[in-house]
Structures are given as structure tokens and as C-alpha cells.
Length: 189
Image (cartoon, rainbow, N blue to C red):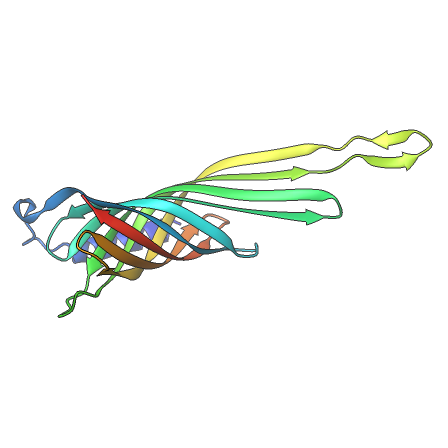
């Protein structure tokens, strides 16, 4: 995890050359949107994830900032016992917009986020016969973990104030990495 943070810091150092002055920045709420897609957590079958995001402007003409709120949940039933895992994440990402001659804008980037993970296991009562019943139980665990996001995607206008987004991100979360592929719509403010 520390090596990953160091790698992100080194990339950020070279991605923001000294000639990018703060005077050229345009930071502030530019658009808000929603997304929906497929999330594939490690060691768990894939599931649907959704969220909201905000374009927070740019530090330079090619380097922008965005904030993301995401949610996914996966449940499974095994012989009457139910397990469920969910993640609520709050992430900040820096995106580099590749030069292009069209309105189709590809980008790549990275970010840091907090993942609020919760796992639950519920077992049913077991009837042993003869009036003997073993009561069911419910156990849960919640943890907050830091994650590093790496990925990219594209934006393209679909209207005068509406953009279509496509994202492909991998979140490195301790013991619980996850790949997400989502599409979304953003509305300019």
C-alpha cells in the first residue's frame, strides 16, 4: 500500500510541471452526474454498482479534478444462511485529458478514496427435532479502508448541457480490490 501511494505521488509530481500556475486553474463545481455499471470485487461475484459524481474543474487545461460517491452490494444464500457485503466509497480523482481534435475526450488518472465496507452473515434457526432448536445468529463487521484508484475513460457531449461518461477504474483497497466499469450522464452547472 505504501509503495502504491509513493507511485501515485511520483506520477503526480511529474504530471504537474512547475509552469502550471494556479492562475490558470479553474477549480469549482462544473457539472454533476450519476453513473451505473458493473463492479467486480476480488473473491466475490460481480454486481451492479451506482453512484454520483461531480466535475470539480481543472488545475490546468488538461488536468482536472472530480469527486465520486459510489455504492455496491452483493448478497448470497448458502443452505439458508445469508451473507452480504457492501461498499460505500468517497473518492477524489485527478484526470489527465489527452489532446484530441474531436469532442470525444479520453482521459486517464488516479485518486484516493475512503471505502466504508460492511459484511454480514445471518444463519437460520436449526430444528434438531424433539423440541431442540439451535437459534440462528447474525454477525456483522464494518471497516473503513483507504483505497487508491487507477483508471480512465472518456466523455463526449450528447446535448448542449449534457455529457456521456464511460469509466474503467481499479480500486486498490487492502484485502478487497475492485474493478468497475460504469457509464453515466453529467449535467453542466
